[in-house]
Length: 189
Image (cartoon, rainbow, N blue to C red):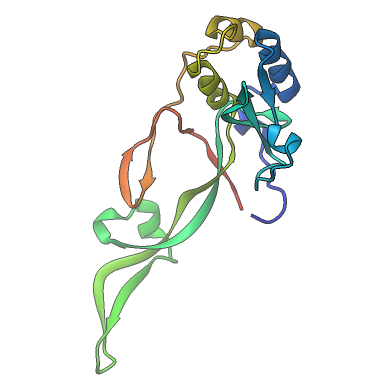
């Protein structure tokens, strides 16, 4: 993913600043540490955007740097997909760029297959993990001093809220998304 991807503020949901979250978690339990990869000179590919959350030296999860969005934010890639006519959307049927797929035989005769080649947007790489993901992982570790009530009161949030489940493609098969997955898919790379 070359360069910086600008993410509109409206897509980020309710944000929490990295420093506020770090200081509160360390107030709750002084054995929570951050960014030990940098401290231990361990490089990772998203080091400029993310950092590790550790408890007693064990990695719990990743946390974004700077202004942290509410939910994960994904990049989107466009792929050419071959589909039968019954799976096309109305917009794809009306799109002049939708092409009929042909097979060419040994006599170089083109025969339509009944399928169409269209551009479909697919979820690609996770750009940001979001604070809901980070706080769920921290709470699941049952760290002494860190409670859901304390986090909700400090940041004025409702951690019982789950993002709307969505249908998305996993290996070509449509399945319900996990509650941990975001409903937000934005930003072209």
